Length: 327
Image (spheres, rainbow, N blue to C red):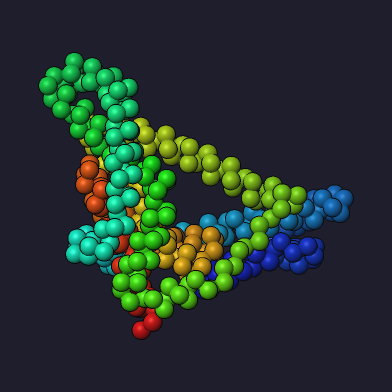
């Protein structure tokens, strides 16, 4: 509750009235800092004084948001990871997929596309990268190096094929199969109400405003740089023989778990900001789900079956959440 009140006070900083902005920003500074800032700003023209307070307010908002998300993770992560047992859902998804032939129709397109992508990626990897690795491995490890390189080739090709399949094909197939599972679980009313539920789009700052260039644009740049650095690190780790792809697979568990459960949030018409808050609030649940789902996707070729079964698992989890909310 205290974190929510802090967020509410921080969001009030962006009002244009100078006196209310001053009152809000004073919460983030000591009396000595306020006195120094006031004296310095009084020597500036009026328009620069208001911008100074505005910038201080934005920095307070960012700090408050970061502190709130850290609090969510520290309070819920360990409990959700070990107690909630969401790692069982991918296993249940396999049994549901095998025992329900109706769901096989949705997996045919996904399986065909995955096989095509796997063959193309595997062929290119074997033609251009395997010879380089094979030469070094055979010289240093002998026949064992030959075996290690080919295991690495299968794991890497499988991981890349899954990634491309999720980018190109996954969203459409996931939504259709997810909704079919919810319908099979008796949630027709929920699906029908979700279709007519209004979706509230958050107002985004215009590029002509100071808020965009001070708050939004730096965040976008920082996000791009962070993801580029993370991608390079993951690529380097994945090159570790045999263990590398497995390590990367588990590092991406939170993101994977959220991707399989995201459809449920969209059906509830969650905004992007609320989805982000839910991700941090239930990070432990998504991590546990993603770890097991990732292990099932790790085995080459078997991913043909585990990709749709993991979608079913996400829908089974959503079905339990719907039942809880209605009980």
